[in-house]
Length: 385
Ligand code: MET
Image 1 (tube, helix red, strand yellow):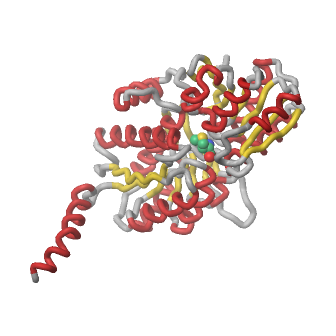
Image 2 (cartoon, rainbow, N blue to C red):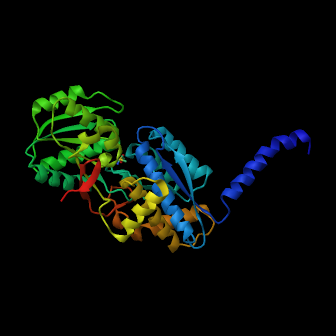
Image 3 (cartoon, rainbow, N blue to C red):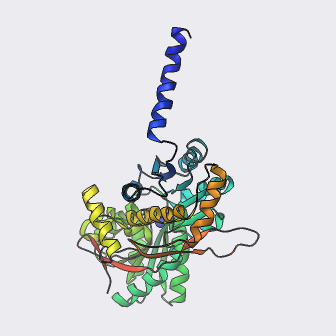
């Protein structure tokens, strides 16, 4: 071999040996597509931490059937196009056995069809919009959907504050905020709570004064907000600047501590539902909270808890199958083992249920879990009793 050729080949050889040492043959590669940068990063980083913590625990306990779990983590930036790119990389290039994510439902609607076509499980831990698991039998989620959470949240908020009428504000160009709005609308009709006005905004808006002025004039007892956390926090702040004191009722987007980073005390009295509470003192949740604090030096949130549980759900499924080394077969074996898995995790007892039927289509699996209702007090989410 000529010297020049060796020089050209050397980086490739080094790369190949580097990859080989990072992932030896017995590792089980699990992909994670999360929004690690951009407006959804607060959710995505918590999700990444939850996965890393659980993978460390499983590996420290010997892995699954002697195999170590290897997380391949990619930043999908909370954008549809990036979620598609990252899913393709994880599935076709990295040859992950399964892919977790993406963070937003909006991105999941773009990326999950790729996983379903390739017969690879796409496992969402934070996708709460309606219709996610209608995308196909390889879509799973342990994120309890808005349709299950919002009726419980609304009922509790109405009772707590003695609410007679509400105004609604929502993002009309995001799959999750739009789906949450649809669910709120149906829920308010079912629970016979009149809506004084409905206002919408678009992704990236920062000034909500026009909508909030209309809401103020309609004089509601509370404001229902189907929003992602950053927008919700700014809406709350701007509401207070207009002299409005109404409490907020929100969906899953409001469950992030980012709400308090931006809105500070103005976030107090906001009511939202979640499958997780830091006050739920089961042994599994106590162990999760303590381990998270020890590893990351901060408190976990519900997104970290769901990611942590998701990894343990997949580890439990992997324990039930014998990997053959033939990727296509192993991916399907994992999909078939998952539905029967139950765990007692940070978010409590977890089981799957088959998604509602769609004519002419195979569907995936939703979370079978109860919602807990939290209220914001002093920069924390506490149980609404
Ligand atoms: N639940 C939202 C969604 O499904 C994600 C934001 S809250 C992490 O898009």
